[in-house]
Image (cartoon, rainbow, N blue to C red; front, side, top):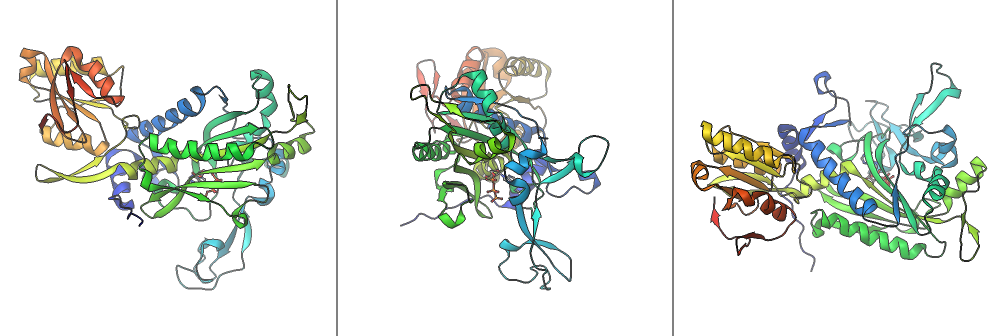
Length: 456
Ligand code: ATP
């Protein structure tokens, strides 16, 4: 029997929370906004950085077989001829003859306008790369494109990386950066944008070993989303059948997430053979080959490409963390982020605005701030301040009260369980470090277990 998948997140709730608390704003909002472009606010930028830094640490820095790169957005126009983007990176566009609205033909259920029922034009192929001009003259010889993926930066630098790092197969090149696609239909908040960020790996392997590495990367990436806190039941693998594959792809699997609007792609893992290196070798005249030191063979490595979207993963993190429950007879909204992802790790809250208390609270705030993103808040009732921190997903609140002035202890309150416990100020940093790392909290010889302690 399959378990029913549930989520308390709706797109309206997520969009409203993001706007209200400063995660995501509409781009150029004061001018009425720019469609499908978004600005990440003070909390959104922290969440996004945590995600990208976790990816970089786990996929690049912790591995012996991976190196990073940061290539330019504008590339030689021949790159896009060789890669096939100029010819094939198109969507079938249809236009309504009555209301002039435009749609992607392959997304329509019926061959009529979904907005007004009007007659549609025949589909024409629309290239979704953004075009611009390099230099002061706007003619066809100065046309360049904003990259629609970061991947080509890795392929064209294959030889540079190989000779400078002396890596042996299998090894990968990884990059995080902006990409641009002039999508015909956008929507669902930050799920489909025209400007977005990607985290991509090109993993080069010996031909013949690609199937093993493809399976390896599907598992590695599927597990990684769970390690950063996404629920397993909200993830699924969609192995593409032959008809769904790009003509050069040997295999492809999408990692999908259960978004409020339904299942949607988070990341694609593709086994691409030697298509890209061969295309660039033919177009550039450079060999782009690898010399196998053991067998003395010369060949072009095969590639397995795990390609993830930052913005979609941020949306998945927000939806997955979203929860509602009842506290003090009132509804509370919580973002139950994994501590590694939480934009703010700790909030320091003096019980009152009275001077000796504020001084001590500020001292604690100053001590914690260099270690973690920490907020200080002395406005409104303590209950309201807890609610505010719950709503932005802060794992721990440190409350300073009048007793603290006498016994040098503070109350640490855990977001998820709402359990509170007194901790000596001298032990606060170590305690929080252990808790944020997911270790059980020890106070003296006593281990603080979930559900134990005084409830708020
Ligand atoms: P889709 O089918 O949803 O258009 P795609 O298969 O074209 O996506 P890829 O080219 O495989 O996407 O890109 C890799 C990843 O980049 C995607 O899994 C997604 O997370 C992200 N991505 C692609 N297009 C967009 C977009 N317009 N907005 C936000 N993220 C995107």
